[in-house]
Image (tube, rainbow, N blue to C red; front, side, top):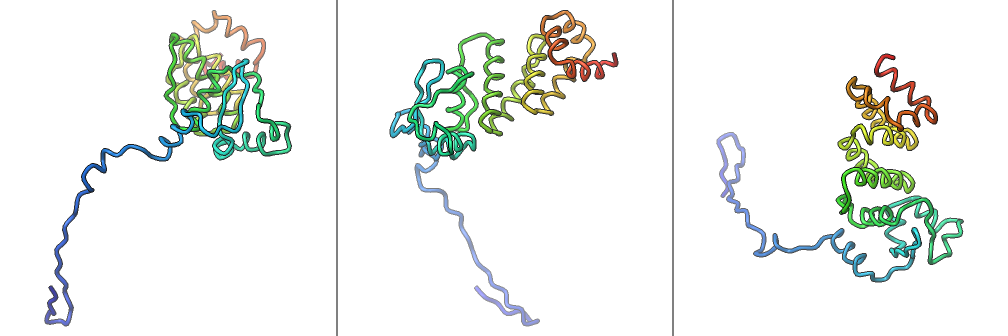
Length: 214
């Protein structure tokens, strides 16, 4: 309905109604990552295979290249892997490579394990290294957060070393903060890991001692 006011202004009145989504739409499953994960789990159209710890693990080149510039260089660059249907991966556990692939296909960090807590942290440490190796920054950040939450007397020094080696300033600082607490530092100096840091990474020891004012 239209109405002209005394000042010449035209005012338009209208009614609106919000319609709900068609019945059943909210129950429909499926999306980009879900469909891609199904493609991966069904093993359809694989065109590259990796050999890791003697185990063969297959994947799709297009997915790896889309997610990782390192895979792009290895699979389509001037390297021997570019013309090979089977690529050998050294210095990595098969379970870590599988977790890496799962993240590439799904963006999901929640992988399953059956071992105790310490081994779980070791697995995340290995995945952190793998993420840095393949320039998967989102996965690396997720690993950093998990490793920070899991800091303990048993893990802090190994995590500190990895943070230093793989250029994670944030994780390094969190490790130093945890290790420099008086009650923690008193325990750490009695461990073999502390001796290892003292002999192999003296610069880290200097950083730690600055935190505890030694």
